[in-house]
Image (cartoon, rainbow, N blue to C red):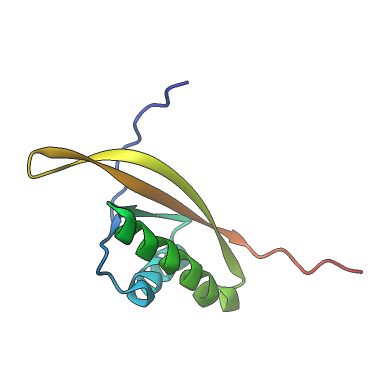
Length: 103
C-alpha cells in the first residue's frame, strides 16, 4: 500500500552529522512541551545517528514533566540544490508516562 506524501511540518528540526545531540534534544524537548509532536529530519547515517541520540536524551529532559516519547521513522524525499535526496523523517510524539505497575 502506498501512503500519500505528508505535508512538511512547520518548524522541522534539521539534524546534520555535526549537530550536537544535547542541543537538538533541548530544542526537541522545548517543542514537545508546547506541542504534541515534532519532526526531525536527517540525511545520511551520521545525521541519523545524531538525531536518534537526541531523541534518547530528550526523554531524560522530559521525564520530570512526566512525559515520554514515541518515535515513528519513515523515508521522505527532499530537494537540495536541485537534487532529490532520501532523508529519514522522525516524527516524535509526546505521551504521558505510565504510572508504575503495582506488584
